[in-house]
Image 1 (tube, rainbow, N blue to C red):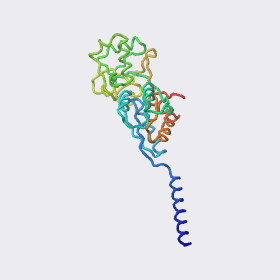
Image 2 (image 1 turned 30 degrees about the vertical axis):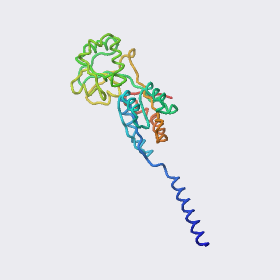
Image 3 (image 1 turned 120 degrees about the vertical axis):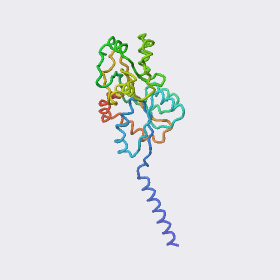
Image 4 (image 1 turned 90 degrees about the vertical axis):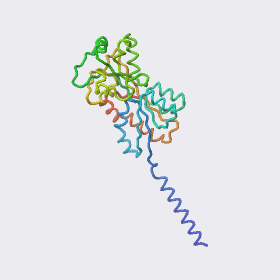
Length: 261
């Protein structure tokens, strides 16, 4: 009988030890789905190796226009972290799709103008000269506002305010998404507009410069964690990294500015 009791005690002890060991192990690594709008994709891609090496989690990066991401979320797309414009994040907070407590502003970027590498650089140093460069260009390109890209929405609004939208419509290429620079490289347009970070990311085009300060428009990139995420701890760790000095250096290299808390 004593022998049997001793065996049971040993079995229980070994079970407790195994359970304690299991609890001491780190959580199993898993995928972290990140939805990000245009310009910020490069930043997440640059920081992903560091995050994956330190956390063991793998980032699944999905990119679209800000409007496209909002439509995905409204359609029920699963995600852990979303990065897009503050107004669209606010809508997701109101819809209880993301955690209000997790919202953080990460970066901002202005709009720039570009031409093919080697092409003459038009003078865009003042508002009047920028407007003239638009009128003089053989063809222009920017993100289609209907696609939900913030730079395209702003440029279309600016041209309407100037009263030149109808005049330049026949020579305007509205890009559905991705890099506007690609449409200069295939000779669809001679002058393009997009966030500066998106211009610097493409070889074969030259950044003329930012829009004049009086008409510059900054896009702010704001992040939040899905209210339904099962990887909230990992998602919080990613947001801490994206708000860190290491990421600030990457932002500067890519033509963006970090936003201090």
